Length: 310
Image 1 (tube, rainbow, N blue to C red):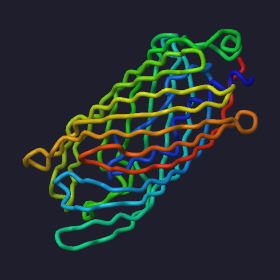
Image 2: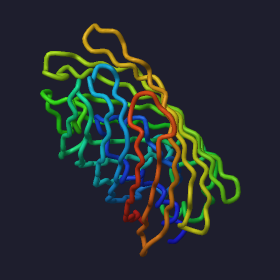
Image 3: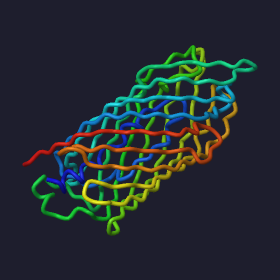
Image 4: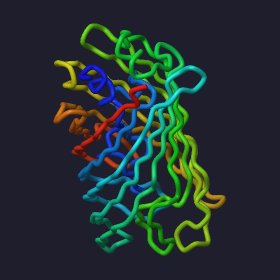
């Protein structure tokens, strides 16, 4: 049981950092062990809470300068593994809420606003293409599962967050976004080396500020690299990094804004609690960037996992 629980604790994708804000969080995911092996029929639920604070550099379509914010984001998530084309597949859903204060200069006036509401719901489907065939609970327990893995995934956010086109600062984005990704995970003794490459694609926000404008954004390329170390069964630590670039913004037929080029570094610690339970703590901070949030984020998440024993 402990081997299975240890493998499945890696499935929850940092619920405490899943909330997606219009204030620039897309592209900043840091998810070590996102393609970990687990038996099909594994289910899990989790709750998380995160705090982010720091500066925000808006693109020129938003006339706010010297901006900063402090945001709090509880989230609830669930997921399940299943077999698809004889490979392990995983689907997860996270429902985040967010509240906090943001301040900045609008023209010559300094202003501060408070926002609270549902953030954009986030869904992710992944499929391990190599190194992780679909196995039931009993078969998985008998076979080694630390293999070189190649996986692919599609992450999607929906326009479900709180949005008001009379306000420049919103929690929701009022658009769909999609991120196809390919990832590799290479085990080396007690280390796991992960590398992911993907790109966010966005639909248009046809009800931008005042409701009479259309805001569009170009693709945002993302790269992630993680090095994690297993201290003992169920306890591991990871060094996380990400870079994202592109994502120039256009309002109506105006001139595109400057392209983004941002990077973040962070760390993750995951440790077991009671039977079938674990807790994860994450920390990350912006290293460099032209447009977007330069937040420092601390988050924690609890999860409970159970298995189909057939």
